[in-house]
Length: 342
Image (cartoon, rainbow, N blue to C red; front, side, top):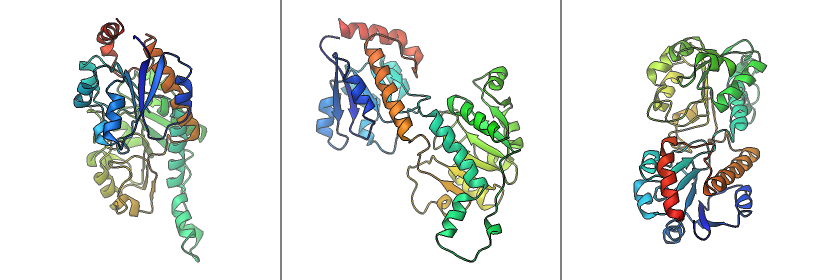
């Protein structure tokens, strides 16, 4: 492309590794989009070649979501990059139709999310958060009132066994758990190679003592874990999600916990983030609640910032990105990019 190629990111928090990596590219100019100043934001974005957008849907004003309306105002865009594995803020079909590549950072926070998942499992099963809250408010209660269960010897069911699920499987086995997994995108032998016994979703719901979600949020998974799915879980099972809000039905989870059918839940992702203070799940002692922080560690944020910038630099240099969300766009992308370069 003639002259500097312009990458624009929002002014939301990002590790310095992103700016530092792009600063090493003399043909790339970095612009900052102030999300609370529409006029200044559009001045930056309308001339952008690449838009690096947060994947956190409830932190970004809707005006800056990648929609057909935004794409119409940004004729130079060739690539949209998200700040995580998710792309809830991006209309991928609209980008594909416009010849725009969409890239994400899948795997960048896998270790952090896997560790957090295990923490939620242990926290709920051993009643750690419940004990912590009571110790701060009460005295005189017997320890047996907060007595929990070991996870050793229990069955861990993973709904999805990609980058994160594979790491959770390894952690589960290290704690002496039997690990099973349901993943419609993988052959049975590949599920075994990743450390789990392959089962159907129905079998997983019936067999697992812990059910942990590690699948993407899309049209096939929205409300996949609904009232019927919760009813098919073992009585006393523990449900965990560090995936995306909306894959499980929040109200159905409330009912399953209130009825006593489920033993507890560890929830990091919500329909609205953060959930309102009066959310019924936040009133339950057997719910370990976190604020979509599973992948929010210093290490993960640094890794994602660095890999985002590296991938953007590669795309602008003409390379095919390793984490392309819409691979079907590539022929149209190459034609469009060639036209913009000429």
